[in-house]
Image (cartoon, rainbow, N blue to C red; front, side, top):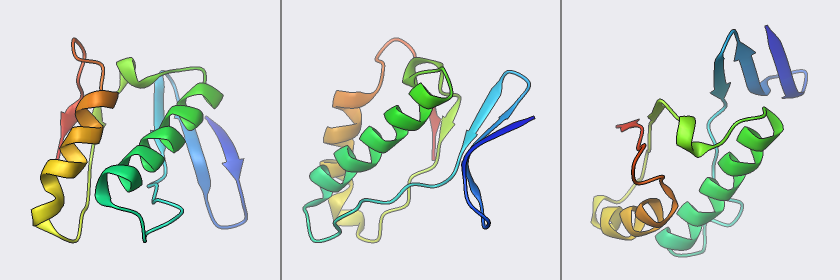
Length: 92
């Protein structure tokens, strides 16, 4: 098992066998609109995956939390532009 980008509290990346686990990510600026916040988080995920030697095309699952259901369309717009169309992960 390998742990990367770690602090005393947690690791941002845990690699166990062939599986990479990422810590939850949040946008740096929550005053931005939902699409921009989502793009920010997805960019962080790309960087973490690159650090672990992987990329989004190999993602197995994503769990997304948003506080305002009316913003789902804006989040999906950013997600759809980011996700690998022929290899999307399961998503909750």
